[in-house]
Structure formats: C-alpha cells, structure tokens
Length: 126
Image 1 (tube, one colour):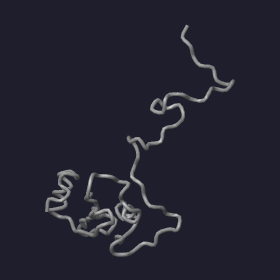
Image 2 (spheres, rainbow, N blue to C red; image 1 turned 135 degrees about the horizontal axis):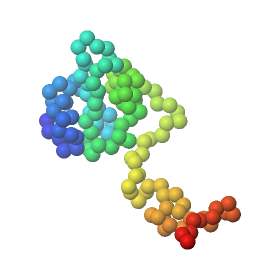
Image 3 (cartoon, rainbow, N blue to C red; image 1 turned 120 degrees about the vertical axis):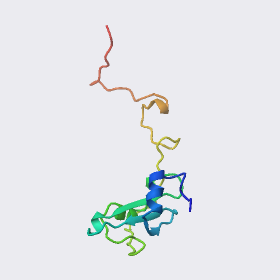
Image 4 (cartoon, helix red, strand yellow; image 1 turned 180 degrees about the vertical axis):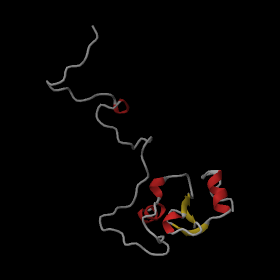
C-alpha cells in the first residue's frame, strides 16, 4: 500500500489512493493510473505515473509516454504497440554524472580549447 510513498509526491500518492484506476505496469515497475472525468471523453481524463524507484522520466517507455500525453486512447497494456525497427533501448539521463557529455573547452574537461582561428580576437581590458 505504501509502495512509492518516498519516491513520489504526497499529492500524487493521495490522488492515486483516492481515485486512481490502475491501467498497467511497464518493464521498469512504474505503475500507470487514470481518472476519467464524468461526461468527458478519453482526451479529458487525468493520467499519471507512479515511479517504482526515483522519478526518472527517461525510464518511461515510448508507448506509455504517448498514452500519458493523450496521443493514444488505449494504454500499451490494453493494446500492444509494435516497436519501430530503429528504436533502441532507452538509457538513463547522464546529466550531472561522470558520463555526461562535456564539449571541448569545458571547464569540467580541463578548460583547454582548440586555438582560435584568425577571425577571432579576444577582448582585453585596457
């Protein structure tokens, strides 16, 4: 009952307990919920995710992203979506880690950049 209490906001957990209709679970253990609105269509219902671990949006599969953003009427648990042949496995965000991309000249990469060409003249205070 208290799964996800510390990895999701208190409001999300209360909304889930008191009105969430469970739709499915993905391969990462994230659970998906909806709350239909009376007299409204599927595009007006509330949809949300309760993360299994820390909230990491890159761990939401593409089919579930489409469902959360109301591009799909039926959840991937109700209607399986074919994966495009070019699709690769998602990777977690590397921002803020040692694996993050650091362009040449970045302070975190040593601060050395390639020598400037003749079309660049640095400003020097007088």
